[in-house]
Image (cartoon, rainbow, N blue to C red; front, side):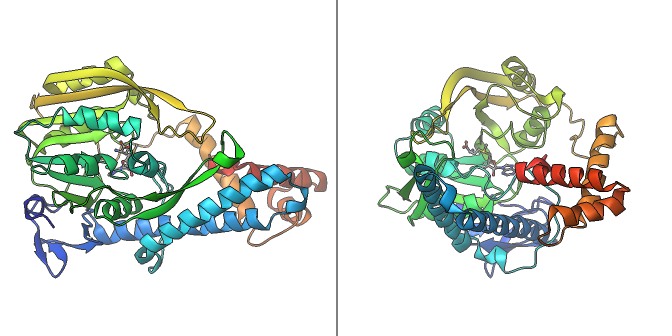
Length: 429
Ligand SMILES: C[S@@+](CC[C@H](N)C(=O)[O-])C[C@H]1O[C@@H](n2cnc3c(N)ncnc32)[C@H](O)[C@@H]1O
């Protein structure tokens, strides 16, 4: 590990400096492993490992069973072109799954635990890999150009939050050998893969789409690799989770939050308070991402003016420009997503008295919506407890007759509705 970067690492719980011994980082309170050369700096390292192991094992099980289901479905009734498209997708998904298996093997060797449903899964953001590693991607080039303009000669240490597949980190590290770059990410697959690619190892993956512009565009194999002859020594991946940043306070001259502030579970104001603690006295925070935040809470669904207003309320200097990108564009897809985006850089945090972060659990309001949700879950669980192996609709209907006091006709009707919901994936919501 680059010794200058290693000096910046602190315990995410207590903030104490970490020391390296026997391939582990430790302080008085805790010990953190280093996995594939990447420090595992989650606040509760064992729990975080088991949580990711559960997500990973669940994903493997689901993906395998879906692939088997498609593979074993009756092909006789399928149109030849459809069969060809499905065949291409099967091959792509199988190859990508094997890549994940090989990189994430250590997570399959432990007993999974129950976790609560989470929007952040191991396969989330998989498409970033192609945007970041297929050379000359216009979207990535526009981001590199913007950040490169902020890398003045005074900048020594740079932190990239939610670094994803690592394309930005790699390109910046390659062109700025005098600067130290730290990529912070919570997804082990993205972090391991980007570490391998940055270190000169390659990856063979398929980019595929469920909505191709033609059959032949359904899936395309790529050999992804970096284009550098010499080893990149001014970059380090770190695994951990925002807001528990495992770094010495005030140590970064530039913190980049690319497409990040809009997707984390914190509102913008709290996130800026947290990040500002890690900026050096003349440090800059750079954000680029959507000009509208798609958050659940209506009070956090900011548009452009609100986002800029919050940045300006926190920092003395804020510069913003507007842009538009074709987000994760691929010629393979029949559709593209044009996003209005903001490029914002700000410095000189105003040091507003800290009211404390709104990260403590809030009061649960027993609203009509929560009550409806509870009833839905209760009903589903009363039905699902009877399904533990394959069964016919009539068999399920018989159980529902007893469970809900239905008559024969009603129970068959509801068994049919429930089966339809399973097929349509309505249980996801
Ligand atoms: C929308 S993607 C953006 C990725 C990349 N920065 C880019 O511009 O394409 C958000 C990234 O943040 C990561 N992420 C989400 N929540 C996180 C958290 N709490 N801590 C660390 N990383 C997180 C995701 O795994 C993902 O790689």
